[in-house]
Amino acid sequence: MKGVCILGATGSVGVNTLDVIRLNIESYSVVALSANKNIDRLLEQCIEFKPCYASIPDATLAEEFRKKVECSDASATKVLSGIDSLEILSSLDSVDIVVAAIVGAAGLLSSLAAAKVGKTLLLANKESLVISGNLLLEAVNDSGATLLPLDSEHNALFQCMPQGYRVGQTAKGIRKIILTASGGPFLNTPYEELANVTVEQACNHPKWSMGRKISVDSATMMNKGLEAIEASYLFNLPASSIDVLVHPQSIIHSMVDYVDGSILAQLGNPDMRTPIAHALAWPQRHDSGVCALDFIVNNKLSFQPPSYETFPCLGLAFRALEEKGTAPAILNAANEIAVNAFLARRIGFLDIPKLIEKTMSASTIVAADSIDTVLMADAESRELTTHLLAEI
Ligand code: NAD
Ligand code: MG
Image 1 (cartoon, rainbow, N blue to C red):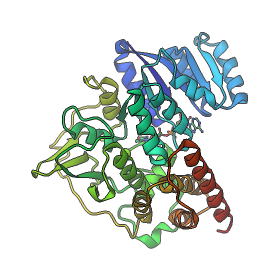
Image 2 (cartoon, protein in one colour; image 1 turned 180 degrees about the horizontal axis):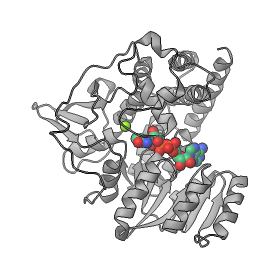
Image 3 (cartoon, rainbow, N blue to C red; image 1 turned 60 degrees about the horizontal axis):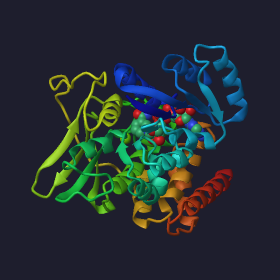
Image 4 (spheres, helix red, strand yellow; image 1 turned 90 degrees about the vertical axis):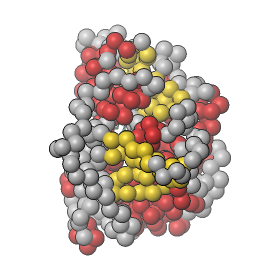
């Protein structure tokens, strides 16, 4: 039995993780769950999985949740609150696997805490790597932790890497990696029409059902940009060895192009339960609940280059990757503020890349050599973007 802690249990990745655990319940014990606001869903999860701990960072909401827990079938679950509670949960002795499924920079410190104490870290929270890739990988190496990517593209790449490959190493014989992208809901929308797209349209992803922030990131293609940065850290590759290829069917989840002309790809139905099951069971395999890919039904796989003109966020992310240091943290923070403003209907879709570009150009990049430096870059970028937002 492996002890599992799921941070961000009530979100899309968290719920899919519990679906896979339910199918393989003899192999896992759910030790801890966390949520931000959705206490009703967290309560249902606590009643079903009976974790020892549950956390709600906000103290007032945690108190409300504690009362509900006490008069439920989950009364043995201890409720923690405070920002530190996430780090406490991810470091518990009874936890073997930490699933980092919080969205945004809010997931950084708990991912780092899990890495520092040598857990098996299943990372969906790509923002952690984008903000502090070197520091996170250093923590993994120092403690002997195992880092396994849950992001479907990176999980695919990990599966296509040579035997014995460890995250953060350069695998020999690789010419490049090819990150596939669905193209999102606006793949065929002319640039001029993007100015007026709605939040609902942006969140309506054609292939994946995900949280709202990553759905908007997919629509702007910032998601693929963040994934290029994530891949650069995970596989120790420069920007020049990372290609982005639009593949609207989302059947090939990414590919490794070797120097001998071989290309290895991982294929499957677009369903997060596959990468989640892969990482949970690794190096074994078990059921994910996902049905086998039907090649006759899916008999057309098409590919096209991404448009950097229509989706400027992709180019901005590659720029941050080239600039290194705190540039990815600045990019990420500006993006979080801009996406939140779009979701709150304060700005238009095309204002998102404009705000990020302005923030990046007005920011000073320094070496990302400590967590304090990175957190400072994150905070300053948020402040600057918020200031620029007021001018729109
Ligand atoms: P989501 O919005 O559905 O869920 C986010 C979870 O994080 C929720 O449980 C929420 O309660 C929690 N949370 C949000 N803000 C928090 C805060 N400030 N403090 C503590 N907890 C907080 O998001 P999601 O789609 O599940 O994505 C989660 C992460 O996984 C993101 O980093 C995303 O990029 C990545 N990811 C998601 C998918 C997917 O299919 N959804 C695929 C690949 C990667
Ligand atoms: Mg992905």
